[in-house]
Structures are given as structure tokens and as C-alpha cells.
Figure 1: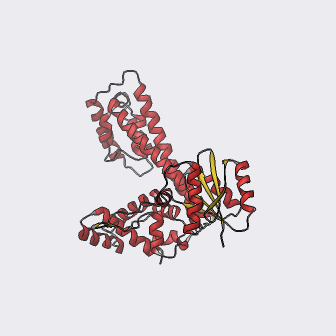
Figure 2: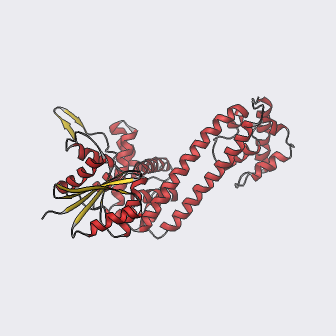
Length: 383
């Protein structure tokens, strides 16, 4: 029996809808991405007994449509844009418009009969939202760190050698208090150790504070600042304050995610693996969601985008490239997780790290060994 299909091409302000019965296009129209437009679409969907709804995931633009359909309990198929592009290109499209994209989605659904996108528990959806916000804050933090490095070259470049790493709240507090060498030399020699002790929440000894004070003063005596008007000094202070705020915000996000996920069994399983801490475990769960919705490790590999598509043409074969069709943030988190597990194996051996070392020797590539270890890790999580 032929079934109605609603193919939706979502843009920033409008969406183009194509209605098909089987492979025949019956109608198409454009709606605004607001309550009025979504209600019009819902009325049309409700007017037929059986139908498929399909659209591409277009980042923030498709989120409102997805939320509306979920609220109305309308099932839908959400396509990865990369996979959708390949499938529609196989239809030999001669030109591309919103209308042809919507019609292509509707007709291809009638042919391919893609499965509906499974609906997850709301706790996973909320975790994913917090994870995406965490990623944005982290990008902002990295951008501010790079800006601070550039400005310090004008005011006090030597301070970057003050500690072993130009990172962390302690370092940023020191930079905020002493943005130029003049600020160090004008300070009372007894005040600097006190400021250093107040700038960290760790138990720093007075002797270490005095040692760091001497080091800072020596740097200041040798440094030369070209900040004639105090503009760069102002920027250094503001950037250091912003970095402290962004770092605190990252911690707040992790605390909120931990409270949400405290009863999830996946959290305890992942944290039991040496090298995976609370933050990494939370981000993995947020990006992958409910592990139980995957019936096999191959499905979860495809979802993350680390599956190996088979490409052959004559004598040429490409079996080494991953598909990259899934969540890029999830791949980054998993990649870092494996690296942490390998580092932790020096003190807490684990089979994932052993597998990594075996694959690294076999294929002479750290990247391939890491991907293989991610696949092994996800396979353990789906058992």
C-alpha cells in the first residue's frame, strides 16, 4: 500500500514541504519556521492516516521543527546531511533548489523506506544540550587564551614562563594582578606572596610562594613593555577575568550534567574504566545518548561516524577512511578518552590501552590505533 510522505527542506527562516504519495509528488508549499507554519504542517500530517515525515538535520534551524514534532508525538526520520547528500545525488539531480530537495527527500523515502528516528528519554536530550553549550564555552575559552597570549607579547611576555603551563585559574589570577612588569616592581615585596597564596585554592606553602615571588621579580626586572597608553594592560586584565569566568562556567555545566546523570547506569560503567573521569563520561553519554537503543556495536559506530565504508572501483580500494557521518563532538570526546586511558595505563592497566598498543604496532599509525580502540570501547559499552 502506498503511503504519504512529507519531505521537508529546512532553511533558516522558512521550510519547503513536499507531499508525495508513493513516488508521485502531490503538492509542495513553503511555511515559516514559527508556530503558525508548524501548525499548518501538523494539520496536513494529521489529515492522512499513515505517513512518513523526513527532513535533514540542519543544525539550529531544524531544532525547532524537531521539538514541535516531538511535542505533537509525530514520528519522523531525521537524516544526517552528509548521508542525505549522497543519497539524493544518486538520484542524478541536475539542479538544486529547496523545492527539489524537499521532493527528493519525499521520493527517496518512498524508495528506501528509512526507519524512523528513535526518540530518546528527555534526560539524554537535556544532557546533549548542556554538552553543546559546554563545547561552545570551551571554544570561547580557547579563543580567549590565544588572544591573551598575543597581548602578553606586548606587555609582559616573560610571565608565560612563570609556571610550567600558561593555563588554569592560578595563572590567570597572577596575570590579572601583574599584567605588566611595572605592576610587579611597584608592589610591596611582602604583598606579592600574599597575592599568590590568595590566587590559588591549592595548599601552597609559604616557601613556594616566596620562591615564585623571587622568580616573578626577576622576570619583571628583565622585561620591557611597549604598552605606552595602558590599552594592552586593560585588555590583559579583562581577558584574564573572562578566562576565569569561562572556566567556572565549564565547572558549573559539568555539575549540572552530573546531577542529571547521577542515576544513569552508563555513568558508573564508564567511570569504572581507568582514565575516564566524570567529565569525559558525562560528555560521552551526552553525545551518544541511550546505549540501549543500539542493537549492535556496528550501529553505534555508524552513529558516531567511525564506521569504515567499503569503497571499491576496479583495482582501487579504500578501506581505511572512517565515514565521519555522525557527531563530530562525540568523536573528539572519544578520541580524547582513549588518549587519557592510554596515559592512565602506566599506573592503572586496562585492556583498551593494551589493545591500543597492539594496534599501534600492527598498523604503525596512532590515529588508526585510536580509532580501533574507540570501536573496542564502544563495543564493550553495548554488551
